[in-house]
Structures are given as structure tokens and as C-alpha cells.
Image (cartoon, rainbow, N blue to C red; front, side, top):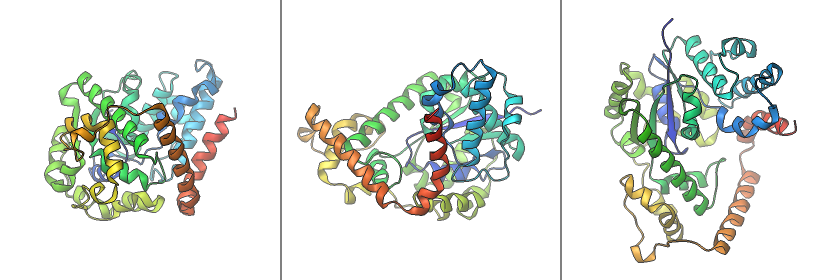
Length: 335
């Protein structure tokens, strides 16, 4: 049996990760299903399952994770994730092993030699992932954090106040760069969104060379694919994957964020912006070294208000697509 390899995309959502995912899904050797965020969702829930060395507890966890995959807003088309088959393939009784077996099952069923997981936060769980024997290729996709923040402000997911967005973006980039230091050079690929959309074919050829897979013209025709169509239908925030590359989709924050928001973001995460090659807009004497507890409390209060207001106005179709997963997670929390 051919060895199946893992590819883990890391960074922060709203950085072009679905675009890159559907482009890579055009490579015959790669299956790149839309992520149900197995580890991010289930690691905080593990206390609900008790000792996983107990067979019944592990079976319950496996059944719930398989259900999470099955009700994903973007279906894993052509892939059947059955609890009994997943359990039969597990060599350890851990959530990381379930993650490994589910993605390898997806690859095996589609005849792929690589699976790609787009759960960007998995850089925080790299040690656990690698404990199962996976030695993934990491693709660190990053984008100007100010444009990421602007995108989150318009999305159904994520924080909404610029302070929280800057904190999260900074934390994510620091974690990705720490993982880079621990990973062999031939297993870590850094790619910024701005280069991807400016030189897509050249960039994707370079990435395919890194992964040792042949480049396919289907990569640049991603927007015609069934996977792109399914993704766009599942949520407004993914609608761009059915369009050709939006080459001017950069520096939108200059037009749409207030100067106050830009200053807050750059005060929090300016060092990381500059480390990744982005220039600051705020004069150095206007950057803040810190914010008071009172200011942060006000930011957090406003963030909660904005998130609640956003959900109240969110598209009902988007909410309905997410409802089965949300209901599953809420049910587990009641255990």
C-alpha cells in the first residue's frame, strides 16, 4: 500500500486559505476537503469523554467526530466516514489518531497520495498531530493582518473589534514562526497571499515542486470545480472561490479601516507585520506601547456587542448550513 502523506495549512483564516485549498484540490494526487476543524473543536471538549483508554468513551468520541465531518457545511463529496471503519483503523485511542485516520481515509477513498487539512489553527497542535506518526508538509499562508482583520469584520465567524483581531493575528503568526524553527526546511513552505494572487501560476508551480507533485492546469481553473461550487454555496464568505483570481484584493484596509483602527492594530502587531514584510502606516510617535486595563475592557465589551449584532443580521442560509455542527457541539457540552 502506498504511503499517504499529510499536508497541513497553517496561519490565520481569511488569508486566502480556501482559495489555496481549492487550487491544490485540482492536483490529482491531493484531496483537500473543507475542514470541520476536528482538533480545534474537540480538544476543549475532551473532559466530557473521560478516560479515552476506556473503549466506550473512545467510541463515543469517534462517533461524535465522524458526525461532525458528516454534517460539515461543505460536504466531503465522494468520501464516506463511518465510525466503525475509522475505529478499526486506529492504532491509538486519542483525538489525534482519529484526525489522522479520518484524513487518510479521505485520501484512500479518493485515490490520492496526499490529504490536505485547512484547519489553520492546527499549528498549535503540531506536537499531537506528529505523535501519530504524521510528518506533514506545512504550508504557512499569511496575509497582511490589517486586511485579515477587515475580512473578519465582514465574516460570520471570528472576532469583530480591531484589538481582538490584532491580538489573535499576532498570536497565530508567532505560533507559525515558532513551528517553522522546529520543522525541517524541506517540510515547511512560507507563502503570502499577496504573492499568490499576483503570480498565481508561478507560485503554484513552486508549491507543487516543494510537494513533489506534478503541476496541473486544473489548478488555475479551480473556480470551475465542483469543490469550489460546493464551497461557495455553503457560505457567503467563501463566494470568491467561484471567481478567477482577484488580483486587486490587497490593501483594502487603507480604504475601509479607520485611522484609529489601523493605529490600534499596528500598536498591537506592528512588529509581526514588519517581520513578514509589510510596512506600517502609523507614524512611530503615534504607536502605543500598551493599553490600559480599562481600555481593554471597553474593547472587549464592544467586541461582544459587535459579534452579537452580526449574528442577528447574518444571512439565514449561512446560519442554517452551520446549525447541525453547532447543535452537535452544544449537545456534547451538555454531557
